[in-house]
Amino acid sequence: MADYNAFVTKTTVEGADEGPLAGTTVAVKDNISTEGVRTTCGSAMLTEYVPPYDATVVERLKDAGATVVGKANMDEFGMGGTTETSAFGPVKNPADPERVPGGSSGGSAAAVAAGQADVALGSDTGGSVRNPAAFCGVVGIKPTYGLVSRYGLVAYANSLEQIGPLAPTVEEAAALLDVVAGPDGNDSTTREEGADSNYAAAADGDVESLTVGVPAELAEGADEAVASTFEDALADLESRGAETVEVSLPSVEHAVQAYYVIAMSEASSNLARFDGVRYGVSGGEGNWNESFARAREEGFGPEVKRRVLLGTYALSAGYHDKYYKKAQDARAWVKRDFDEALAEADVLATPTMPVLPPKRGESLDDPLSLYLMDANTVPVNLANLPAVSVPAGEADGLPVGMQFVGPKFGEETIVRAASAVES
Image (cartoon, rainbow, N blue to C red; front, side, top):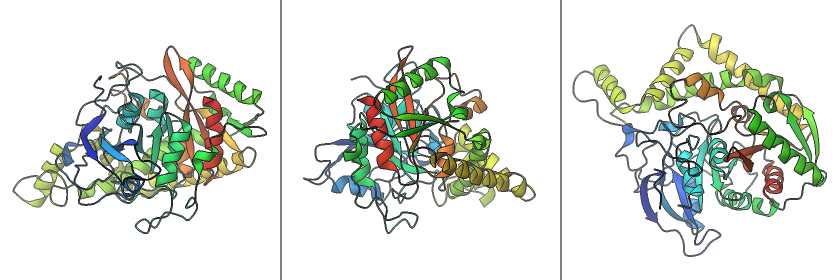
């Protein structure tokens, strides 16, 4: 079997004898806690960290009969769009091993695409499930914020991120979502909606009378080959009885900037615990400030340091109102635009990624271009809405993903629309 470096740790954790996932193998992203199995977050900082407890989603997987077969490789602490920033080496894309699998859940997507796990869990802070799903040619769902417990997920930007499933088909991804969704007493942000879900049953391909809104701002920015595949998929939906309408999301022009200010600010706070005392590699002896600095110098990679520094700057005295407050204002604007667009359509459709998967090393030297690659996915996280990426075809021999965005707790609708694309 080809080695795509999809796993940081391979293991076998058996679940219950019976359940809806009995006989199913699952890869779990390495920022989700697994009792007795190390959880590195793709970082040298946590190379030897072994959690003493399972995340709620892992408990639910085991109760449902799933077998965990490994901890999937990822961009360090979820910071990256290509799974090249892992301290354990880059992941290769099974669709073309010279290219990136997307990130930051690239190991999870590659494991599914390569058949090394039946399904997988990732986490999506700004597209980190949908991005690699699109680049690897599999299905990825980013749930509504509050549908899936984040208890046991190592926090990067906790107001934005959700744990989500990846699978070869929409129905399999929805079935995995059925298992992990629902309220959790350990996570007060979870809600009752979804407690008795049956999202897998919604994957019936029936889009008769479904109204699909196409935001011009997100559809027009894609590469020609991606746009052509997307338009062909839209035409196929119309031939099945769906109606397409053009909608507008003027605020998305500012979404990427707002997203990174908020995400980096939250990261600077969340990652403060990795100081070599509470968590992480030791900074050695000496005064506390010097030990703290050495631990973070040795433990963090360049992308994590960049984001923590920028986040600390945005939150610092004198700059909070100039950057962080404005970013939160823009976030409210994005959410309002989505609400208005979804009043005109049942779902919104865009290309998941505006580009085809780049070759490894092409984007790391230019962080700004890397950040802009997620322009179609980050607005959804700012609005805390559900979205799915489904393979819509190929361009130049590479997978192209189509994204559907739904209203809050509208997972059934996006699952139905996505299942029509693959059928």
